[in-house]
Length: 589
Image (cartoon, rainbow, N blue to C red; front, side, top):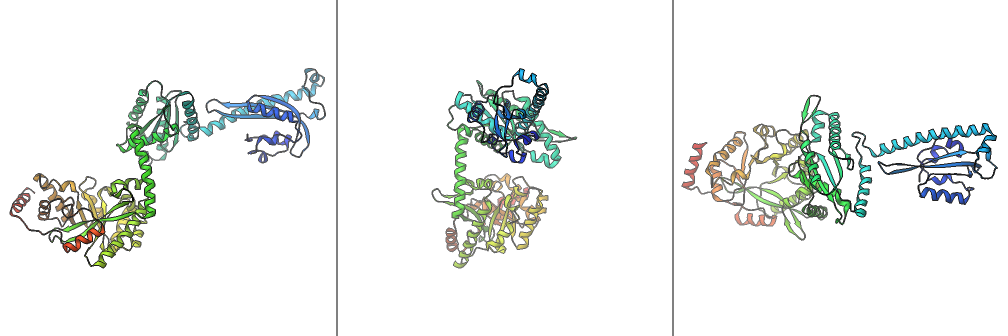
C-alpha cells in the first residue's frame, strides 16, 4: 500500500510533509510505540478489505507520543476493479494520558464544548471523505479512460483482458477479440487536418458504442487502433455480424466542414476458447487476422485461422534468420544479361539479389524481400550487396572478360532514403558503369522532394536512370517527362504474347515509339525465344533481356558464359517469314 494523497491536517498531526509521505508505504503511519496487538489488528482488517477504526497511542515523525483515532474506509470502483484505502486520523488532544477506552455518551455530555468540537470534526471529516471518494473516482476514470473518445484506454484494456482470460481459464467463459484499424486515417489528417482526424476518431468511437452491448469492452489502443472484447455466447455468428457491420458502416464517406473523404476500416477477429494452450496470444492472433484483411485489399474483416498461425510462426522464424543472414553477409548478387538487339553482344547485366541460405540453398527475393522491408533492414542488405557487386565487377575485370555495365533495382523506401547516394559513393562501384532501375510503381505521377533530389544526384554522379516494368498502369507520359529516364524497360507481360498473338504487336510497337520519341533506349523484358528476339529487334528495341539469353546466374557462371561466348549471346540472321510479318505490323501501326 502506497500513500497517494494527504491533506494539511495530516501534516499537522503526524509531522510528515506531503513530499515526505506521498509515494511512501503505509507503514510510516505505524509508530514504534504503537501496541503490537493494534498493529496486527490493522493488518488483518486491511487484508480482509474491512472498514474499521482504532484508538491508541502512536508516534509523530519526531517520536512524540500522542493519542489518535485512525479510521479506515475501503473504496472501490466496480467499473474498473480498482481499490483504495481512505485513512482519516484524529488527534485526541484531551486524552494524552487517559487509558484506552471507548468514548461514551455520558462522558461527552459532561463536557459539551469538547463534544461539540468532536461532532464538528466528524462532520468535517465526513465531507472530506466524500470529496476524497469523488476525487479517487475521478483519478481512476482519468487513468482508465481515453481522453479523446471516452473509451477505455490501453492500460484499462490490458487490465480487463487479464480478467477475461482468468474467467476463461476458471469458468470457461469464451470471448472474441475484434482488432480494428482505420485504413486511410493518415489521408484524413493530411487532407482535412488533425482536428478532422480527431472528429473522425470520436465518430468511430460513438459508432462502436452503438454496435456493442453493456457486457462488451470497447477500447482505443492509440492512434487509429480500436479493440473490442465481446463474450462469445452460444454462437460465433454475432461476432461475424458485428465485424461485418463495422466494415459496412466505415464504407460511408466522412465529412468535415463541407469536405468529404473516404476512410474504410479493416477488422481482425480471433476467438479465445477453453481449448487454447496460450489464451494470452488471442490479441496477437486478432492482429494477425487484421494484417491478413489489409493484405487482401483493406476495407474487410478476417477470422484468425491455423494457417495464419503457421504463417506467423514462419514469418517470425524468417525474420530471425534474416537478422542472422545480415551478420553472416549471406546475400549475394546474381546476374541476367541484357543483349544489344543488333549485335547480339552483352551490353549490361541486371543484378538480382539472392540469399545463400545455409540449409535451404539459394533463395530468390520473393522468399524474403517483403519481410526484410517490413523489418526495415533493406539498407543493411543493400550495403552487403553493393560490396559484393564491387568485388564481382573487380574480379571480372581482372580476368579480362567484358561486362560494360550493371543494373540494380531500387525499392521505393531506398529511393526516398537520403543516405542512398552516400551508400553508392562508398560502395566503390564505378557510377559510370551503373544503371539504377526504378520500378514504375515507385513514383506514379507525383514524386516527393527527396526522391526528386535522389534522382538528380544519381544523374550528376553519372548513374544511368532506367524505368522498369513500364506499362503496368502506374505512370503516364507526363510522369516520363518528369523523371526523364535514359532507359525504358517494357514489362514482360506485353512481350510474352507477341509470338502467339499478333494483335498485341501494335501496342508494343507504340510503346517503343514513345520511348524513341523521348530519346530513350528501349529494353524488352521477357524474351523467351528466338522469334521474340527477331520481332523485337525489327520493331526497334535497342536491348533484349530474358531466359532465351540466360536465366539469372552467379558471378562464376556469368564469367564462364562470357569466356565461352566472347560476350556474344545471339547471332542475328533475319528470316523472310519474319520480315513479311513485320511489314504487316508496320501497316497496322
